[in-house]
Image (cartoon, rainbow, N blue to C red; front, side, top):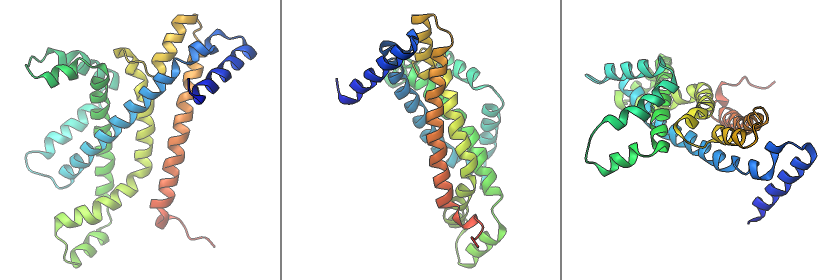
Length: 248
């Protein structure tokens, strides 16, 4: 047992002794750590993959790529107008209906983790596409005209001027999307994954305490949310410094 684990168990025993609440025993609190790790994995893998898709989709919509930009618009509409829980169920139960000899496919549909990642990735991709696309549409004409005056092609203007500045403007809204996705991972427990909420449910079954386990889970989510908010505030101060009013 390493020092961190020993300290965690010591604190858990102390907390249990002080409160007398069975849900806060070391045995029950230890269930939250694997759930904490799973929540972080679900959140960041989904966000990274979703952001890659969203950047491509936003460019397709902004540049109105023939035969592609309309399907992308339909994709974002469908995923933004249906509940994430329904999307997760459709992917979890629906993909298994597709028959194929691919070993990779069978590995995917046999893993609740990757099925949940797929649902979360597509959902955040839809919202992030609209965030970035909206920021691209609000690019000042002066920036585009200046890029053209320097001899940049439309493609270079988009990649070197419009998109970087649009992403800076989209940062506050994207920060909200990141926190939303963190909270959205709480539904992963319905497809047998033990995230933070899944751990709280296990403690509930162990102790028949329907209150304390979810308060504990809420504390974990609050800590993660606070860390993400602090990170995005720092990024906004660094990347949007030119938009801040000059100090007297």
